Image (tube, rainbow over all chains, first blue to last red):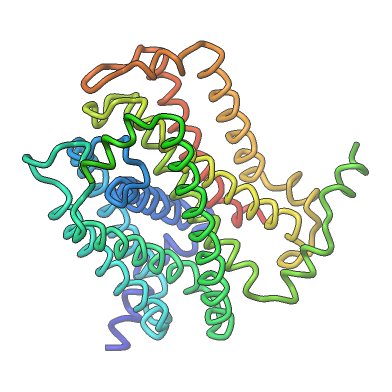
Length: 206
Length: 169
């Protein structure tokens, strides 16, 4: 098994991508992996923000149209991720962080599918607040995407650095989430004071 | 000028912090990536709508995502500042020499500046007010589409050149 993995790592393709010191090789695959991540997580994050009521002005149903870009982002990530894995497959398979990343991606995709299932429907008006199940899955999706990004970043580091970094990210993210929550609530309250009629209508729908 | 930049860009305290706390660099990297995601989710989504993607979304509503994109940019700016000023913790060169010798970093800075000019053009040409009136199904004017395309291209370029920076070190 180990010999087989070694042969993948030493294949002509993997060697070219890993060792060719030109811009179209390793760095470009890595950049495409980042593009895929940005579209996949960024656009599914937009749906999650709407589902969670952070951007209530966005009509819900047209957000379904983001699906093709999200799917393209996923496949770009899957293909480039596979290529990057073949470059150092033995060390990655011995790295528990890599498994955390893969599991987090799997859970994030499941959460995305579930969120879509509960959030969208032809009979659902655009200005309505999403179902509680959709909100739960949206939160889960954001958490797992965050974990996947963190896992991807930390695979290059030693175990003790990974542990410390993960703790630092968790603390930093918690502080920023609390801050974001305060800002969103504050701006919503300011809007209610400024425009009581429109806001009371949307609150009634909720 | 060179002396000024060498002095101004060199932040030994940042480099020392990165050296002392090994979690600082990965923490910065992770938040740099969170920033990229917010930037694409906010600004990229707005650009895509102007280009005709998800046309049923009113532009004024999509515009509400822009503060999230700006937040992402601030994440990237703060962590990027940390990477540049603290670069001595990772390579035996100062920030000024890294910027002067690394073409990918120069291209990244150039694309960020061009993206800023593009945003300036969006407001100066009055496109911001015009696109705000676009309802579900409405198409953006050609100039707004050109600015949106340029914005998407430039930001993806920024990400791309950012990934190439280690090649130039």
